[in-house]
Image (cartoon, rainbow, N blue to C red; front, side):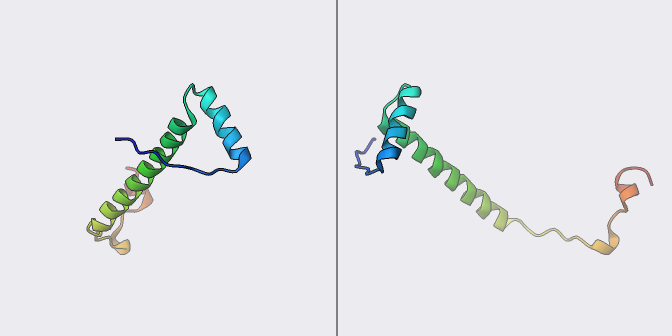
Amino acid sequence: MLKNVTVTLPEEVALWARKKAAEENTSVSRLLGGILEKQMRSSDEYWEAFERWQQLQPLDLDAENRLSREAANGRG
């Protein structure tokens, strides 16, 4: 479902938006909607990934018992 909103833009931003919308053969409304949706999804994806990362169990790494560079690369 689409919702109408009113947006106030500086004149030069509105001019850019009109030109960009014309280049993409769309309306300013759809252009702004697409930009905002992309930003929203990007933000949501980041925070979802961040929350999943926080829930990961820490790895039990011991620097004293790590492989040497040669052993890790199959040379030792």
